[in-house]
Amino acid sequence: MAPGYSFHDDEEKAAFCKRMAKIQLHEALCDVKIKCQSFEMAAHRNVLAAQSDWFLKAFTNGFVETGANEIILQEDEPSVIEALVHFCYNFDYCDTGEKCSSGLAGGGGPMAFNVHVFAAAEKYLIEPLQRFALNRLRYHSRINFNAEDFAKAIEHAYTATSDPKSLLRRMIIKISFDEMDHLFSTNGRHKSAVFDAVADRVPSYAADLMRAAQRTGRLGEECRQMLCPTEGCYSNVYYDVDSNGRVAGYCEECKKHHLGNAEQFGVVVYPE
Image 1 (cartoon, helix red, strand yellow):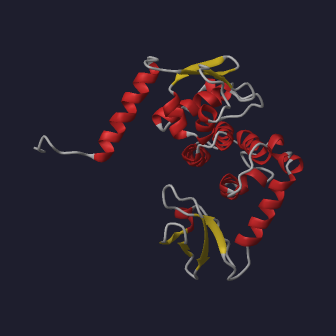
Image 2 (cartoon, one colour; image 1 turned 90 degrees about the vertical axis):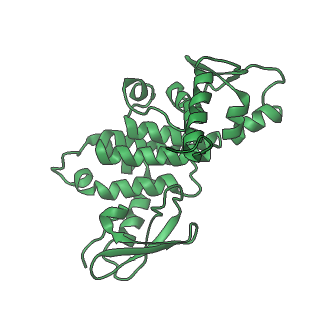
């Protein structure tokens, strides 16, 4: 039996988050209200400011009038702002169900929803939320891929985010390669008119796809690129493929070597 003075860091952090979420749920000690169209939620300034540099500046640099007890975010999707606030307390949010899909003005499912959340995280300067949204986008692409949903995700990713590190765009391209046979083949089960039109409406996506195809196609020893598989890193990693199809790369950011197969790292390796 563990001594009474044992301290488990991860467990204590998780318990703290649960207590904070419970306080927010019951609106105890809340000192600000977030309003977005039909959605409103009570919150704590210190929690929002700790997670978001945008909210920190809003509360400290005069974006919000001194003493004001509400912030109105009318330009955003209510379901997305709800996910954002929920993440600030729980490091999680719900991205399934009718509430999420029907809450997007342009339509879409879980993949599109997570791209919207990524865009909001970028706008309100919450970097951990960007990484979490990327993880959820990847998750839904693997277990519940839908071409129409992905088309909406692509369009929003390329028109509503700046994505200076290309984290989202690289993920979009990776998913495109994973589902290429289904997206572009005539008889593919995911073939759809909605997806067919994306390349025409979003030429920058088509250009990224073409460049990625050149990098990962039949180009001999040319280095390829992938997202670092280290959890929480997501840096751009150059990799090589040996004669046995093994993928090897080194991440300059997290200083780790990565060796495995193409499926493990989510890359596409074409035969010579």
